[in-house]
Amino acid sequence: MMKKLLIAALTFCVFSAQANIIYDKSGVDEKDFIYDEYQCQELSQQVQKSHESRSALGSAAKGAAVGAIGSAIGGGSGSEGAKKGAGIGVALGLLGGAKDRKENEANYQAEKELVVKNCMSDRGYRVLN
Image (cartoon, rainbow, N blue to C red):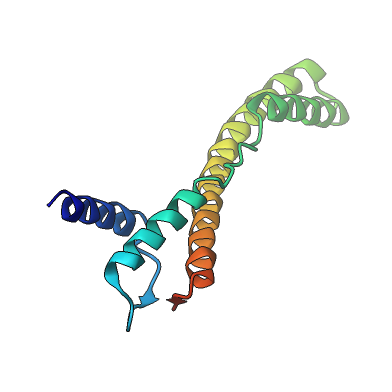
């Protein structure tokens, strides 16, 4: 009874986490499949998450420099242009950082899925997508 409960729990966890992978299960023992997929899932946890993103501070500094230069060329106050440029730079840095984090997460999930697909293929299963 405990073994069946464990298999059911593993099945739920594995299939809810990797619902995007389609396998040809013809002639496959379901218990072996669940066990193998679980092990491949565990291996995919070794994928490293990227934490690279744009810095709001770096963008502010660049924005300030561009604003100061643009304002100086236009004959205005460099410090006023730098303030505006810094504000715009901070806003762009925050927006860019959020976009980078979203892309990093998508890449992380895609790489984990690829590890599971490769692992299952190496174990003899046919991955259809």
